[in-house]
Image 1 (cartoon, rainbow, N blue to C red):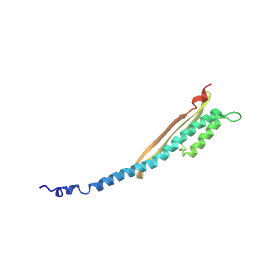
Image 2: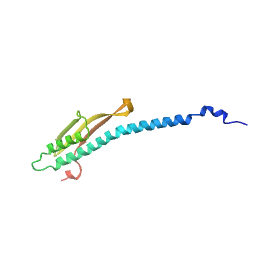
Image 3: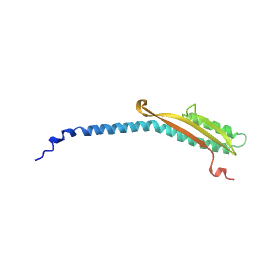
Image 4: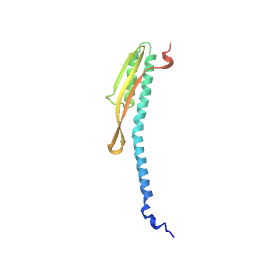
Length: 135
């Protein structure tokens, strides 16, 4: 008869090591998400604010200057969403509308202790579109 219990000594302890490896991978993924998601959310929210600002500039009338409205809205949004101070912000008229272009790079710690930093690149050109431009 063949005894299986005696030949399995080299397989003992394998489940604990596998569990530790899986737990380590899950902790690293959670850390990456914890650091990346807020930066990506700020970028997406700032993009939406840029779109809103150029539409406000299109709708400005009377004593209000459209360029000033767009600049003020985008500068306030840049402060609210932690956009770096060295970001390139260009607001200029393009035909009958105003467009805003913002470019910045923000480092994100993906691995703990600064082992790997990801560069979040934001480059967006906001211009009004849709039914507001149709005559």
